[in-house]
Every structure is written in C-alpha cells, then in structure tokens.
Length: 631
Image (tube, rainbow, N blue to C red; front, top):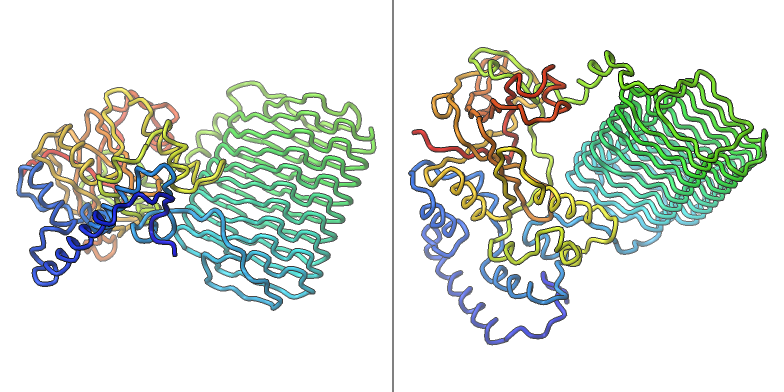
C-alpha cells in the first residue's frame, strides 16, 4: 500500500521510527489535555521564533502564520529523512497531506461509457476512452470546471471511432487558474458528428492544453472553437497531428485566444495529408499581446485543402508566427490570409518552404492586406497573390493607435499616482484576488534540503514527477530562473520557501523592529471604491520596506525584495454609495522609477516615462509588505 512518501530505500531504522511514534503519541496526549498551551505545535514554534527575532509587541501577522505547514512532527521528520534517498518522489497522498500543488500529468484509464452524458458543474475527472466506438448521441460539458482553481482533465481517445457522435464543451474551464487539459487521439477515426468548444477556458490564467492526434483519420467530423482561451494569460496550446489524414473535415477557430496575453499555439502536422478539408481561423489571436504561433507541416501533402485566416493576429501587439512547410507538396489547395497581422507594433512572421513542391497554379495562396515584417524562404513562385501587401519596415507603424490600444493590456486601477491616496477620492480598484493555487509553506527542515535552483532542476523534476516540456517543468524552471535573476539597480532580493526564511530576510534588511502588513480581503475588487482614512507609514515619508509576492511552485514560495525610495500607506476602502468600510488596503508607492523599463505597464497606463513620475499599487491578497515599526 502506498503511503504519503515514495521511496525505494529499505534503510529506515525501526528503532528510530518507534521513537518518533512514541514521542508523537506523548505529544498528542499532551495536546489533548493542554491544547491551548501545547509547545509542540507549529504555531507555538513560530511564536517562539517570532519572539526571538522580532523585538516589538505589535500583533503577530496571523495571515502569515496561517500559511505554515500542516505537517505533523512525525511526518516532517519522516520526509526530512526520506529526502536523502536518491529515488525519493512525492506522491498524491503527500501532496494532499502537505497541501502542495502537484499538477496531474498522467491519469489512469477510466471505463468506457456507451451512454449519452451531461456533465454540468463537473471538475477534475478523467474521460479516457469515453464514447469510444459510440454510435450517434451527444455528450455535453456545460460549466465544466467553471471557476475551479487548478483543474486537471484528461480526454484521451475520447469519441474514438465513433459514428455521428457530437460533443459540446460550453464554458469549459472558465475563470480557472493553471488549467491542464489533455485531448490525445480525441475523435480519432470518427465519422460524421461534431465537436464544439464554446467559451473554452475563457479568462483562464496559464492554460496548458494538448491536442495530440486530435480528429486524426476522421471523415466529415466538424470541430468548432468559439472564444477559445479568450482573455487568458501566458499559456500554451499544442495541436499535434490535428486532423491528420482527415477527409472532408471542417475546423473553425472563431475568436481563438482573443485578448490573450503571451499565448503560445503550436500546430504541428495540422491537417497533414488531409483530403478536402476546410479550416477557418477568424479573429485568431485578435488583439493579443505578443502571441506566438507555430504552424509546422500544416496542410502538408493535402488534396483540395482550404485554409482561411481572417483578421488573424489583428491589432495584436508584437507577436511571432512561424509557418514551416505550410501546404508543402499539396494539390489543388487554397490558402487565404485576409487582414493578417495588422499589428500596431512590429511582429515577426516566417514562411519557410511555404507551398514548396505544390502543383503550381493548382495551389492558390492569397494575401490580402497582409502587413508587417515577414520572411518568405523557398515559397512557391506560382499561384501566390499579394493584394494590398504592405512591406512595412518603419518602427513608427501605427504609433498613435499603439498608445491608445496598449492601455487595454493594463487593468484599470492596477497603477495609480500617490495623490489618489487622499480621503474622499474615488478610483477603480483592480482585481486583487489571489489567483495562485492554494498551498502552504514547507517546514524549513524540509525546504532547506530541496535543491531549489536551475542546477537542481533534474532532481526537482524527479521529486515532483515533472516530465519534459510539461507544465510542471515550466513551473519549476520559471520560478528558479526568476529567483536566480540578477537584482535590478538598488534591489535586494531573496526567494523564501518557509516562514522562518521570510522572517530572516525581512529582519536582515529592516532590522528586528518590523511589522508585516497585507490588504485585509478582496472587497472592492474590480469596482469603483472610495478612499477612507489614510495612514502613511513613517508619517508618509520615504521608508525602507520588503515586499513579498507569491511565485507559482509546488509549495508556497515567495519572491521577497526591497527597492529604494518607497512610501507605504494603509487606507480604509469604502463602498462608494453607502460609505461603509469594505476593506483595509495596503499600498506601496515607488518614488524612484528611473531604472524601470520605458515599456513598463505603469507608464502605458499612466502615460509617462521612467523617472518622471511616482507609481503606486495595492498589495494584493496573500502578498505582503514589511516595514519598520513606527508605533
């Protein structure tokens, strides 16, 4: 039977474990009779640590103490001992016990269902082989994983070899955070029917989607993606061998990744060797921020294939597109680009071997109002029409439109001027809700033994079961890379994985007479608020502070840093109509912005440049600000 620790080692000493068990039983009995004074709890330990390192009698920050590890003494001791084993890994039981974030990347096969299904308000299920060889019918996924923080779903070989079977995904994964969905061999060899993805992962933060061999070898199976990944942030979608060898397949992407931020899409072998397929990309990546799209072997070897890109990457900011061997060796195909890449800041498009080897004029490739810099390497010389093709090289393209449109990428109220922090002022508060997965710290006895670094990546991948190129691997790499980044001018920084580490860093910068503050709740988010009573820390003068922001990682990890010349404020947040207090906010104002990038979102939002204005922002839920106690 699996326990919370996976280890192939047989070196555990029975006598040592017996001592731990007897000690823990003694502690448990003691706790039962003296619960309020039990010196062996995590809270009691943190109280002692705080009192030893902090000299004032200011109220201890319960919002910080609540993030302490939930592991018992015996579990902590056993885990610390297990970490010396080179084959040690963490399993799902321990992830749940320690309240860690462990994405599911390989799920067990589920039973095959032959019945119609209506999944409303479902979440985190495995639909492998679901609907396989099904004859007609309809499956509906409505509000599936809606609002769930970290959904993990697997649809492997779903609807495989089905005949006339339809699937509907409405509001799937909407408002989710760090979603992981896997559609492997979905609809393979199916005939007729349709699959519709409507509002799929709308407003999701860090979506990770895999469509491998999706709709491969199908016949007349129609797929439609409407408002797919709309308004998402920094995710990736992979379509590998999508509709490969399909016959009369029709695929539509309508408003795909519209208004998304740094979304990456990979179409590898999409519609390869297809026959009479019809693919349409309407408003794909429209108004996106720096989208990256890769079309490799798209439509390669196809017969009478038709692809249409309408308003593709229209009004996007920058962006990179790669079309490698697109429509290569195809016959009688038709490709249309209408208003392709009308971005207001220059992007980069690369067409390598585009249409190469196709049958002359029988393959028609049409570019209408195609804009921005691009590279055509070895593309077909006949059958290509460029209508209103603008070879723009100036860096001043659409500068006036750029200044206006870029503001849409900065949430209203995210940055503001110091003068707004005056009683009676009305302003918009951004969404300050914590979008990270719920986790706790690890005890320092454990976190200190983990090789948190880019050099220790292979070990961390093994411990957390992170496969190559997986979302978990990216999470491990991104956190370690950011923490190892050289500090900016005047910055002092550290990444902390335990409460003890955070206390140590804050006191090393500010001294032992410190106070930790955070915004009390999320009241007022995404709406107009009124500023109530305002208190400036250090009487509103420049002060030293340490700000700590969460990083996405399996256990709770904070990026803590101190930057020069800041002011810290506390303010009551009032409802505009009733004037009642709905929140108590903490804000920090950066007085010296001279080292910031000119493209920083604050300057886009407030309309200025580095060093010319101060920039303020709220401390979001579960982030915190440390400063010297001035009471």
